[in-house]
Every structure is written in structure tokens, then in C-alpha cells.
Image (cartoon, rainbow, N blue to C red; front, side):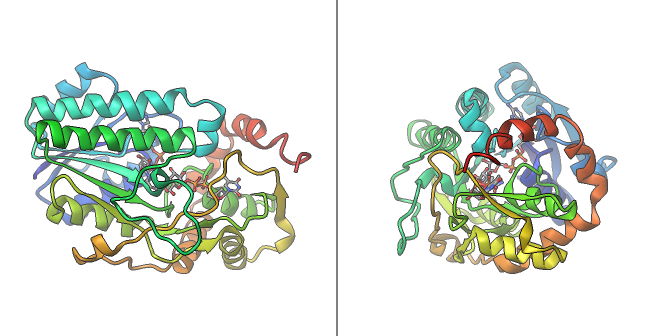
Length: 340
Ligand code: NAD
Ligand code: DAU
């Protein structure tokens, strides 16, 4: 493993992974292949833009020609696929791009991996593929996939395709299924950066329903370490859950955010719930634990550290929130304020 093509590498987790790899493996070459959708942002990669082992290609993973050209040109031996449409609320408004990218795009990448006999194809997946998890249970990798939003269904479809390429063509694949990541460079449509930046501006925080939904908030660099471990020590053909084993209600996460940023509870506004909202995710992480991984941050530390990053990095998020984001925000939340 030496020449990595990191698709979706200009997004939140992808960019953090690129920074991690270039720092950890000085002899690796990293090619970021990214369409630069609204969520792709080269500011996330500013610190490595002149790095001699870093290259950027703007391209769509659905475009077979450019994908194949890139694999050949850079002598790629490993694809790590982060590219996806990733926001559940947007998938409810319009699922089209979700299906295109995660289903057809994943197929294009798998075909390239097969054609050029790559050493590894790694798929970045999510805990949402398991669907809503009742209290008292944590999902295992062998559980059925029961996705409940168009986003989750697009990701589950990709996982099934990846597994089918292992079984049918013996393609060397691995999959990681992560819980809710937070940290630097997350587009402020996701709850933690949205609420942190709203709070910094003394704007209300639109809490869906009663706010008692449960998530495992995970610091992004912990997730990057887990992906690294699976790339180097994971068993071919296997999926690995990557979570914290500590679940938290959204209202507790919000309390930590507001306390860290010294903002009042009065910013909390309960609004109309998300359609089909999954109440709880919970991952059993014994399998990756057996490889020697554990998260370095508790969810509480991850939330506070993330809040401080947004407080200290207005240069990054102010320009995003002042552009097309405003239109999205009005469309997504305009009706919610009146309509509980
Ligand atoms: P993100 O939305 O921040 O970034 C996605 C990136 O993919 C962007 O840079 C975008 O430009 C690129 N992209 C989208 N469509 C593309 C296409 N057709 N071709 C090429 N590039 C394209 O996403 P993220 O939060 O960093 O998530 C990355 C991956 O991790 C996704 O696969 C997501 O499903 C998965 N995941 C995310 C989380 C989370 O909490 N954010 C948790 C578990 C898994
Ligand atoms: O679980 C992993 C998944 O986490 C990833 O696969 C997705 O790509 C990522 O977007 C995230 O999905 P969620 O739907 O869990 O994340 P989001 O930040 O959108 O919402 C987290 C919780 O906060 C969820 O219970 C909904 C709630 N929420 C969200 C928003 C945007 C609110 O209450 N208000 C909001 O405005």
C-alpha cells in the first residue's frame, strides 16, 4: 500500500483522513479525487496543498473515464471511498444524488479496483445502515441491514455491492461503519457544527422533536485511526463497526456545547421532527477492539473540543454560512419554526 486514491477527500472526514495519512506515512502518495459538491471544500486541505506527496483531481466517482485515468496515471494501489452525499435531511428533500453517487459511483470504483487489480478497496460506511436500534442492543457487523432513510439506504446498497464484489470476484475489500463524527471542517448543516455556529451568533438551535434521540458522537481523528488500522490489519472481506460505545441524547450534547461556548439554554427551540427519524443508533465495537483500537476521546471531550474549534476558526465557517447555505437553511427550517 503506497499510492492511495481518497475519494471524497475534500469533505469533512476525508480531509481529516488525508491530513492524518500524510502526517503518519511520509512515504505514501495521496490522490484526492473529489467532485467538489457543496460539501467539498479545498480550505480543508490548505495545510497540505503544496505537499509533494499530495495531488488533487476534480472528478465525479460516477465518471468511469476520469476514475480509470486517475487510477492509471497515479499508479493507484488502494481506493478509500469517502465520496457520498451525506446529509439525511437533504436525502429526504431530494434523494437523487444520493443514489447516483453511493450506488452507481461505488460500482464504478469497484469496477476500477477490479480492472486494475488494486491491493485494496475500502468502503467508508455508517451505523445508519443498521437502522433504528431498540434500547439494550448494540449492532454487530453480521446484523441485517435495515436502513430507513434514503441516505441510509444508499449507503447500505453500497455495502451490499462491496460485499458482492468480494464474494463474486474475490476483490480485496474492507468496510468500516462509523458512528456520528464531529471535529474540524464539518459542513455546518450537521447538528454539532450547526448548533455551535448558531450558538456563537446567539441564533436559536432547532432541536428536532423532544431531542432525546441517541447518537454516539465520535471525534473524527479517532475514526481516522480506526480506518488506518483496518486498512493495514483488517481481514479482507470483513466489515468493522467504529463507534464509542457511549451513547448520548442530543439534549445532553447540546448542554455540553452551550456550556463550552458560554451560551444560554434559552437558545434551545424544539421544532418539528425529522421524518422517519431514527431514535437510536448503537454499535458493538468488540471486533475492531480485538484489532487493538479504542477511541482516544470520550463523546463529552469530542463535543467540547469541536465547539472550541468552531469558536476559534470563524475564517472557515463564516464564508460557508453566508453563501448558498442561507437558501438551504430557509428551505429546511423555515416551516419548522411555526410547525412543531
Ligand atoms: P461530506 O459531505 O463532508 O463530504 C463528502 C465529500 O464527497 C465532499 O467532498 C464531496 O464533494 C464529495 N463527493 C460527493 N459526491 C461525489 C461524487 N459523485 N464524486 C466525487 N466526490 C463526491 O461527508 P463526510 O461527513 O466527510 O462523510 C464521508 C463519508 O463517511 C461518507 O461516505 C459518509 O457516508 C461516511 N460517514 C459519515 C459520518 C459522519 O458522521 N459524518 C459517519 C459515518 C460515515
Ligand atoms: O450516524 C452516522 C451518520 O451521522 C452519518 O452516516 C451521516 O452522514 C451524518 O450526517 C450523521 O447523520 P445524523 O442524521 O445522525 O446526523 P445529523 O447531524 O444530521 O443529526 C444528528 C442528530 O441531531 C439527529 O438525531 C438529528 C438531530 N438534529 C439534527 C439537525 C441537523 C436536530 O435535532 N436538529 C438539526 O437541525
